Length: 470
Image 1: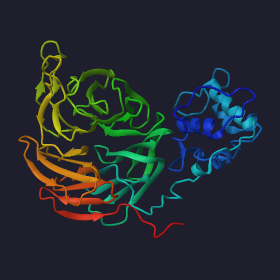
Image 2 (image 1 turned 45 degrees about the horizontal axis):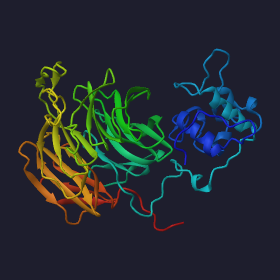
Image 3 (image 1 turned 30 degrees about the horizontal axis):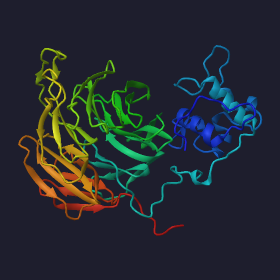
Image 4 (image 1 turned 135 degrees about the vertical axis):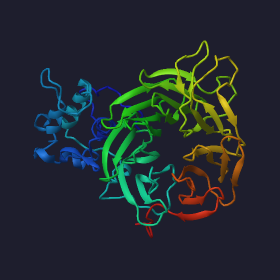
């Protein structure tokens, strides 16, 4: 398993491995633009056989034993002081990486990949399901007409009531961790990747049903995707303990913050887009200023034991109010929009916090906490507000059993407790009209409930199931 791509070349007498050396290099630098969903230049780089195709230029890309005759090698090699043509829009490969490709081609451009990784999934070879896959994420479009559901190597777009065949958005990432529609509903952001190999942010053009952007990042799957209010930025969390944000059109990294000490699993922008809150397995929610990439504050208490486990859920409370707050002496005194954020995690207790501190920090305090709610027996895996912010729901699990709760935000009243017949709940989303709640989780089935009664309106498997194994 490749955990990181070292900038180190084998010695002259050593054989360059396609699987261990070349394949990870191409995944990180090339496959975002050269994959079935986005075949720039008519050239694919997601599997070994495709590397030998000609593409639009009608020139052999890889000629075994002859790097100087291989178009691919020429495109990544600098010409004097000129920047190489590829990777387009990214930093050039290092001299060591270019030399690695040269040696691989010179040694015959051989494939040493194990058979277990040679199977390709793409739009022409869609995933085949014999059982419903675990649902890790779902989201309603802003107009309420579409429900996006995670699958294996794909996202499935269903009519919001579940009636009718889905549109299948098949991409490079086998693991889909998080979905989010853009504020205008025209695009869908997807966070995922391949465990221990690469992370990826996908942006899909929903009108064209085409991949608009693939941004490879880190060496593991990524999580907790969210859009800035203007749709210009996409934030996400990483297994290398970092919080990041990219330009939603170009994929250029705009923010990098390393204040967390464990995996970052969720993100949310403030309503003005100036700040970014992130939650982590390190039991904290942190605040970052977007423009400067500066860590501002621990929103949650820094007292050991204040939170009993890692955080998995973060959601910004919707509000039309523009009430401004100003920090006290010893805090950032700039005026900010008042924001509240829902968090939940391993201890099963949902809490709402103020995003911005208005009192001076004192060791041992938890001054930003607004309210604490009745918990569930297991861990909270999902949570969301309705469009008004007056209600929120959480879903979770313990020992293979699912738990669902619906609360009134202001008075903490529990409107719905539903446990019977539920498998572990990993994701949920309110319909924009607020009268339906969609659930998904371990059993691979989408349930749509009437709110606040909890009555089941519809249940369906979001993927096409095959009758039997080949």
